[in-house]
Image (cartoon, rainbow, N blue to C red):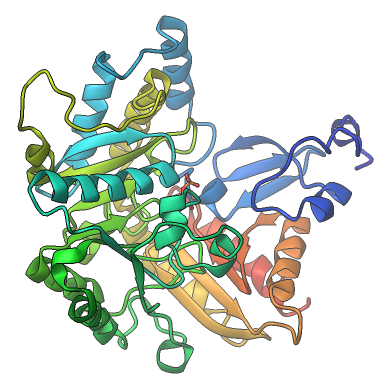
Amino acid sequence: MNTPAAASLDRQDLEAFWMPFTANRQFKAAPRLLARAEGMHYWTAEGRKVLDGVAGLWCVNAGHGRRDISEAVSRQIATMDYAPPFQMGHPDAFRLASRVANLAPEGLDHVFFTNSGSESVDTALKIALAWHRVRGQGTRTRLIGRERGYHGVGFGGISVGGMVNNRKFFGAMLPSVDHLPATHSLQHNAFSRGLPAWGAHLADELERLVALHDASNIAAVIVEPIAGSTGVLIPPVGYLQKLRELCTRHGILLIFDEVITGFGRTGSPFAAQEFGVVPDMITCAKGLTNGSIPMGAVIVRKEIYEGFMTGPEQAIELFHGYTYSAHPVACAAGLATLEVYEREGLLQRAREMAPYWEEAVHSLRDAPGVIDLRNYGLIGAIELDPLPGKPTARAFQAFLDCFERGVMVRTTGDTIALSPPLIIERSHVDELFGTLGDVLRGR
Ligand SMILES: Cc1ncc(COP(=O)(O)O)c(C=O)c1O
């Protein structure tokens, strides 16, 4: 903190901001401040260039500093800064909804806008409950998530989520929630490339829950097709198909939380298409605006939307929405973002890069402390053996060392997670894994 840019913030200036999901005291003692971004890189407040291995936070899929997006945002904010979304509309909201629906799997063709992944999850859960009720099956109130799942930080999301620290401080949460088991198994699947072979049978746990509660009490199952925040857990071959079959058989809605897998991360627009499994709703956010302006969405199957379009025409059909749903500036960012993705073929690019990426991930196999490597599309994970008595410390130290050497990665528990912008070139992949390899090997 001794260069001019960084020195302009002293310890006291750092105090007021209560940083999210951050060790505040540790950070404020040695801050990592970012000041600028372009393409595949950030620059720190001290002027150091840092390769972005995580697309900001799984969101800057087209890379940083896209002029088309910033210009669309500037134009919109100057033309109309805000428009109320209740009982009013503006053209770009409808245009963006159509474009998102066109990207989604066949049959998912209505879009409800939110401002984040967490709000998308809460919205999808509420739509599921309300839909069963409006069609006369109001006993279906039970929600099923999965252990180790991450669905944001709203009360709905933490209730169906399964990461213990995100839950244990916050009381009773939603009633009537169950969890499927996580699919991760080092014993069976360590060092799998792409989808692991073992574990499809874990979807059968849903049958057990149906036997326990009866399907007439279950509203929805929500899972991430690839679990991200918990440390990148790739679905076993056939697992998602099985969940789909069971949900259909029992009249349970299937929600895919695609907040990280949406918008090209796997090599298709959504993981639903990549894995050939069509859910009833998709939640998304992040890549929708390339991370530039907060925005999320829930993409809903036609029958669900139509289920609400009954009753008197002047009646509000769904008592839900946010002041900033379909915010005009976010819509402008979203339209410009989808244009960039399409023009540059970015929603398919992860598929082209995947073989090279996979080799790079698995090149770390012999590095000290590595107990598993996982990959799919442009997603990677390096799981480390925790230091005795110090869970998370080993991965966090690797994160700090990488950052010192000009590479930004992310850690969760003792897993290093990677999700670079989809514009990544082979030279960046080499740099990313070269640095990671050096750090892990203590070079
Ligand atoms: C699968 C999933 N769902 C929901 C969220 C929450 O999104 P947000 O942080 O925008 O609320 C995230 C964030 O990483 C996520 O990965």
